[in-house]
Image (cartoon, rainbow, N blue to C red; front, top):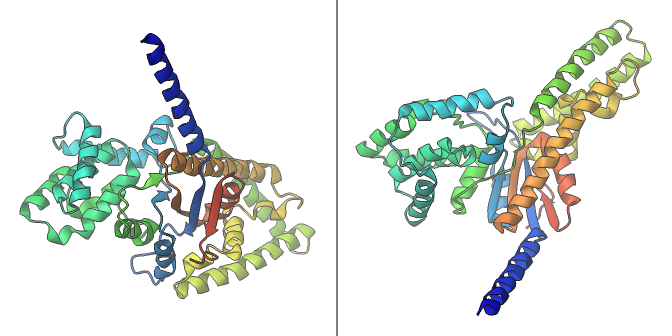
Length: 360
């Protein structure tokens, strides 16, 4: 009998290991979208250009630029930590009665909402619990869905909303924004495609080092700019002038695209990549070798930026495979786009479709 049990356990272990191995190299297909973080309150952007491609792609998961709960808890500080802690405290101070086992409430709420998405009070309690569990991506998604349904709230539901989440006109205190890529692209498409959770892929574990490198580079770049202004005929000034001329050309393209409602298309193009790389990283490598330009400090800044993007790329792949999803949409600030796409394309088993070139 003991031998039989041992054999069964061994077989089970082998099968489990095989399943894990199979999942670890599972092929995944990605529609990658670089976005703006702020399209404005009255956008002219033609979101159908993006959303029609998402529909045609038929994803089974979406990734956004949020920290997972585990990643948030693992870092003592980063640029937005204080703001996020205020949001958590805001919910906690409402003192809305919640069961001790929030994880169970979250699971049962998702199950109930899958059966009937109009269980509004369930969704309100779920949102409260998600904030306190530090699942900020899905707390924002639930807030979006509540606000889309608010016209259907009765008196009891309005009262529960205020008790669980605060006054409906104070959602900015929870970081809720109606100008972002989530509001106009990701959340509407997730809702339409009946995908109930947004997966997180951001990384901020290098943020303090990044900030330090950025400050050092910024200080020295300003000194460099002051120096080249003293002699407009110097080789350094001419190199800097050429970079600024190129930047102005790209800026005109960006402005024209925004006026035409095609900003997202522009920021998913090579010209968009070039423009963002120049304006966000002091020209990046383009002034390397120019006398007086702080190449070492800018390189340090770029290295920390690369580390963050490497983390994000790894998070996308490992979390998608762990969840068993095969077709995913990634929405991320366009400044990340080129680097993460290149990293993903270098990953075995990963196929990446860029927004502009994707043809269903």
